Length: 359
Image 1 (cartoon, helix red, strand yellow):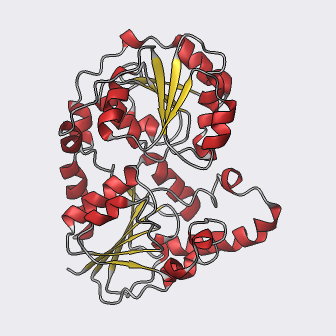
Image 2 (cartoon, rainbow, N blue to C red):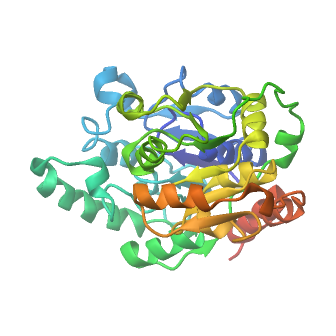
């Protein structure tokens, strides 16, 4: 079965990219298509075993290609321009445009939906604040809805995403949780260098919709603990300006260092509405409880009272109160069998293949 795998853009490393490498291992002969590649920031692409094809955007200057705003109205055309007529199976992995590829009637198109496009549906204000974009966004919503009808099957990565898919795209989707690569994490020896003062941890891309500012601002008045923020993004400089002296920012750290941070932290704090929440699984796997906003995919990953707790509003006071009420010794995360079994790679592959090969 000749296969193509489509992804929006290859310009970073994160939880989704771990999923892509799993697909690469299961479909080693598949061809890959994406709008553009930034090989410096997406070094993981060197492990892709199939051919990788980019759209016409790859030839554009960086300031256009890498800008979501400047390339916004070109991206639908970029994915519609791919000629996929020779493929029997197309798998699109997308949070925006990749689902819009055009396939022939006999080609099976399975979409792994990371989320309905956030900046078009429900979260526009976190991404686009200028009024000039309103009429264009309306046209893009129309295109996005039509594009979401093109896949033969949609697989959502959480129940939260499935609900959004039904709300915005009027499509029922099957939930298949992405795999947690326990074998990878077990192969790494953690860095034993740990901070002396007790600390809480946030691991996230530093973008506005991630709401990391709530945690940083909460720790302006928390002196008992330090805060360590791991990640990078467009909001990093702004967050550093408002951070208190007890807050440290790290980026591009090794997995060994990340494991150590999880193992010694009081808890991981997740103030954002996550579609899945891969880092919450990482934290729990290494014995770190999670304090999470009670909405989104992360809420499906946490066993309240056992592996973490929740706060109900995205406000500074809610984060501060959650930290004040948190007692580390009430959580016991020694048993990781639940994570390994529920989010096993074999479980993901088995469910995905059953969809691919069903008539």
